[in-house]
Image (cartoon, rainbow, N blue to C red; front, side, top):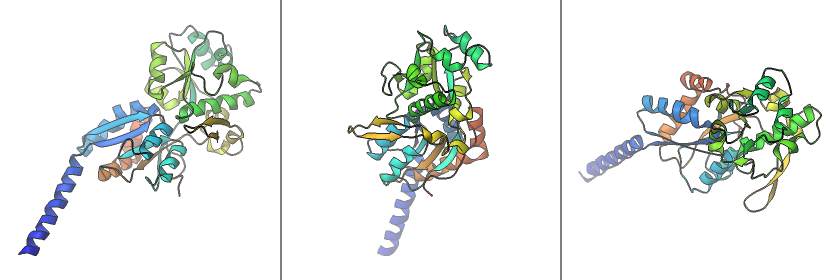
Length: 306
């Protein structure tokens, strides 16, 4: 009788644990530029079919990865841009793999009510001054994110450095961006496009996906500059680099990585079942359609840890 009662108790405990997990919200952390597609698209769609509460939190990918690695925050899923942030979690023992779910490229976004909007629009359609010549205009307010914590902030620097080589214009990147760490231009990742929409800045550089999601006009850049083409990764993109200092004061040399979004289930996920389901949903036909509707392109490559 005791064995029977003990066995029944274990079953009850197991069922209770499964029920608790099923009732727990799905917590998804993601690159700050993905706010629209996550919180208005993928999250609500998955919540409806998965019968689970969705909670999203966005921040610069490197900053978010460090928060997760230090366990200052706990989540079920992490979605980053470029493999670098995922490597932080792999080194922390929190993930074994990351799968590609989408891709994008760097563009120049601008406020349609900016005093420089007419010039930028002409450049967009191939008329008037080139885009980089307009960005060099006195008085134009350009915004970007922090390259020490956000891949998007790094990628605009890489794109301008590549533009400098592509157009054979020495000093172009510094004329537009100033120093790598420039507090006059650097804003929090989640608020950059909001500032652009509000007219606090005239132009910024970011991902095509986020710009389309925000319904802002933008200038497309050649593959040699926009970091979208894996064929240029070794032979061209990685010919540029710059140094940043981490929180401990150490200097690290950064080089471009493919603009691919990766998703991973964290080992300490409170809701691992729904976490795995959500990653599968992002890869599904419905999930990919939501990505496309928000300006993202198909996933490229494979897991960076295989």
